[in-house]
Amino acid sequence: MRKLTEYFIKRPVIFWSMVAAILVAGVLAFLSMPKLEDPAICAKQAMVVISYPGASAHDVELKAAIRMEDALRALPDVNKVKTECQNGVAMITVEFKMTVLNDKLQEHFDLLRRKVNDVSVYLPQDCRTPIVIDDMTDTYGIFYALYGDGYDYSDLNRYAKYVSRAIMDVKGVKRVNVVGVRDEVISVTLSKERIARNGLIPTQVMMALQGACKSVDAGTVASSEDRIAVRVDNAVRNEVDVRNLVISTVDGKVVRLGDVATVAREYSEPQRNGFFVDGRPAVAICAAMEDDAIVPDVGNAVEASLAVIEKDLPAGMTLEKIFFQPDKVKSAISSFMLNLLESVLIVILVLVFAMGFRSGVIIGFGLVLTV
Image (tube, one colour):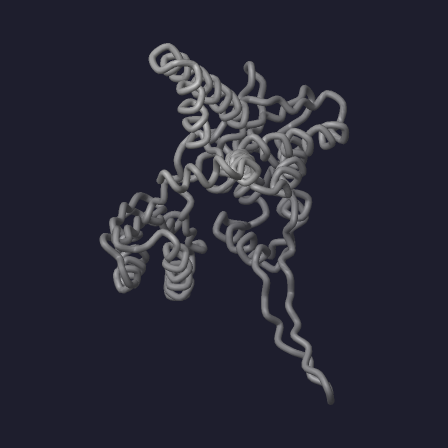
């Protein structure tokens, strides 16, 4: 140690060069290190949601949940499978073993999705495509609200998707969701008098609607060189198509659905996921950031992108910041740096009074380098 000290005393240029290199490396490491408000949590579980409209909880269990659950239990490294069945829906939670490494977890999720896709072919025809949810631990640190007088939910949803695409293009953003949009439905209210007068029954109307909403394989057209597939697309795209849907009666007459029923586009009731700002209907745009993101830098990029987007919004539509995690992280970093500086200065002052000015400054300088 004595020889090392003598070496640097005789060669001050080398000593100060190393000190400068250490300081620069420390500053660069601090600027480039991930800065998050909360630590990243890796949940080793996923949820499979099977929607079976109109089925009782017992039918959902027997016809859909058990078959899917048996297939998921056969996956490697599965610790536990828990199923909850309700009327019209089954929720299957798959928990993997704690021995699964975090960097290998995505491979298990991909294998889970492939298994769900394979089993979905054997589910009842009325079952909808199963949904796999594996992002239950994502924290949405950026919330914006979009609202405006005179705009309905369809307008807000259209512009919210435009804003969400701009946020998704920012480096460091992992996922963007739009919350609070009400589902639109086309309601068909039959008139008992008119369907009776035209010789119709409600079952005929339901069968006509189901048939019009399906795409039909019409075969192929073969030539000497090519074989072209022919498909008949569904005939219903909006409420006007539903109103003009033609239904054949038992005695051979043809009736428009709009002549025997009231067809209207409206919002589904009851409202499931409403979002309001100061009592006004709005939609929320939520963004989650990558686990290794520098949150303040991502926040600056998001604000710069939205500053351009706001110029394209129509008059009367407002994009308001509700919660912005980058501001919280900036405040926390500033508070930490201030506390660190105060602590180092207090230690140096104590050393100066206890050991003298020269010794105190030397030891304090070494403390700064180690920090």
